[in-house]
Length: 519
Image (cartoon, rainbow, N blue to C red; front, side, top):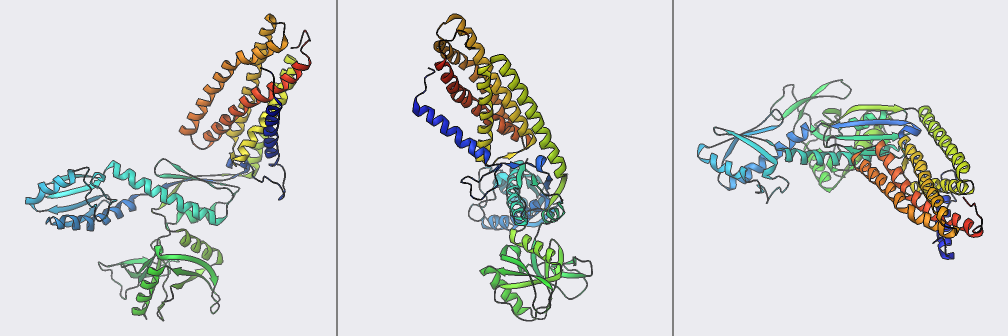
């Protein structure tokens, strides 16, 4: 019925006014507002930087293969099977030899896909993670498709969190960091015009190790030649890691009071402090290389034992470079190197142009719709237009409530919502016209018009909603922004048409129920 109780009128009015207030909060700059959430403009509207990063999982795969060697040795040794001559070739194959008499036994164990080879020691390694071939007594293993997917997923998730920590510490406004596939990450930094510093931070793996420099000029099996970061010299460094970045609790830049040079102070966890204290006690007089991503950033001589669990990294640092190094150490090392494969920078002028174009398109469409509805349906066209404006307030208010990011495709979704809201009103009013031809009572005619058009209106909106849901789950980035505004717009349209517009219509029709030509 067209009748609305006072409670129903109060609820509709209160709900609408709340979201009108939330909508207006986007345009009011004040700390005294009860509600202070706002819509964030996307990269294409306010400008900023877009980076597409690809994870190089080759080092991770090699490291995983290296980690399986002691696991395999221990497991098979307990079964009195001797595996020998372990080698990693092409960074993705693990090969080893077996006695001729034990080939079939080893093969049988590896073929048991549900058997957890190392259940008692390292549950994360399972036999179904590997594929293998046998040539005489030589076994050649590599990660299966399932194993590679597990490695890539874990690496991507870890890299995502590390990137998020680094970007957050830089202080960029509302960054958007998303997975893309299973080996890529999208980083959107709205408002950032010069991405150079962030690119440098994201491009560093930040794998920190402390190792002793070996006296001499020849590499041995247990050492390697590394270059200093500034390219000034080379040094032979032991492969034995005394301490890694995993043992760091905190790192901060500061200025040394004695030398007045910029340094990075760090503190270690309990295990790291114990190792560092032992190494510096026995290594007095030796040079300790601090190696970051395969390059020596500092190699001080140990003068005294450091047992306090804290230390200092010195080098030719500016305060900015020391700040960035401390940030990298705090955020932790990336699981694998990252490569920037796509980069875009949108200037604020271009973003403003996009906003202006979107507003102009919305305004033109809105005015044309308003004119058409008033000419076609007169007073009911005016009601439809008021409903249309409130519908936009509701839509933007809900997006504000969830602090959504508005993009150019999102504006397109709002424009489409305007069209759908008008379409619903047109269907209802045309149906009312048909009902009036056969019904003299205006109240009954209007009520029947709303009821009989409901199926067509809801069906049209549900099919559009299904398309929006598919776009949301199957699409990415801008497509999702469009689907969100479209989906929310469908719900606000149905509410505004069947509650707000119907309420206003009922109030008018009730007062003018005896008019002959009411629509």
